[in-house]
Image 1: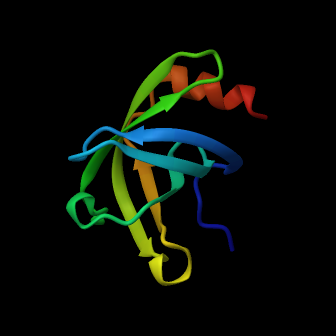
Image 2 (image 1 turned 60 degrees about the vertical axis):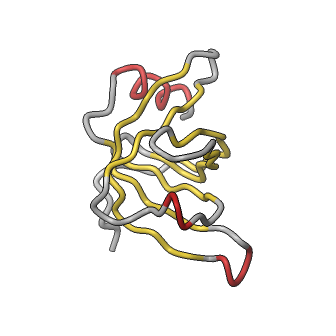
Image 3 (image 1 turned 45 degrees about the vertical axis):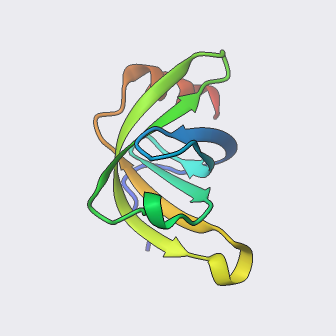
Length: 106
């Protein structure tokens, strides 16, 4: 049974985590109006702790960038398999620009 509130779209987008101590590139695997699933390299100084807030800067297809305020919902360390972490984010109050961007992906 599907528990998601919004339909997920499979994508391959590069983004940046703004709330970290170094440059933190991330790769978005799928997204919806209310959530993001992404892959990132493991880092002890920039941990993804469930319940913590992070900001993501996403570059849209039109060249504009938007900032998404998110909450970490879950994090899984894949480093023993492929040196990555998988992270699930809830987007807090998604901006209209983001919602419009999603419509272009259908």
